[in-house]
Length: 145
Image (cartoon, rainbow, N blue to C red; front, side):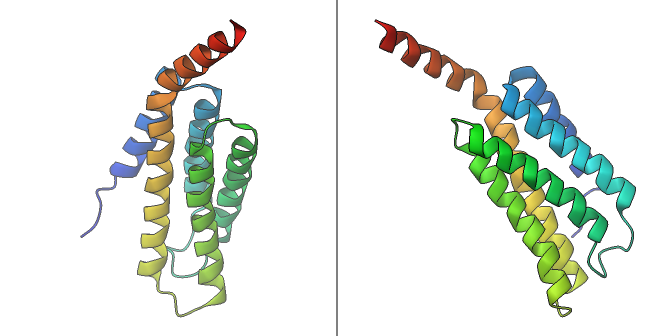
C-alpha cells in the first residue's frame, strides 16, 4: 500500500502553519528547517532510492545540525526527540551506502517513518508551546515573590 502523494507535502505545510500560529521561536525555526529541507530534497532527488541519495543525505545532515543546535539551547525536551528521529534518517542513508543489501523499499520506508515522526514531534511541540510558555511565566513569577 502506498501513501498518497499529497500526504507528505500536506503534513509539512500543516506543521509549518501550526508552528507559525502557536509555536515559539524554536518551533518556528524547526518547522522552517523542515519546510526548507523538503524543498531542497525535491531539488536534489535523483534515483528513486535504488542507491544512496547523497544529495538528500546532505540536506538531511544540514537539518540535523539545525535540530541539534536547537536541542542544545532549548529548555524543552522535544528538540532532543526531533534531533534523534532525524539522526535515524541520516543513519539510514549511511546504512544504505554501507550495505548494498538494503533494498530500495526498506530504505524509503525507513526515511518515510523518520520523516513523519520528526514532523509529528514538531507539530506536537508547536501545539503545546503556549501552555509551556504560560507554565514558564508562572514559575518565573513565583520565584520573584
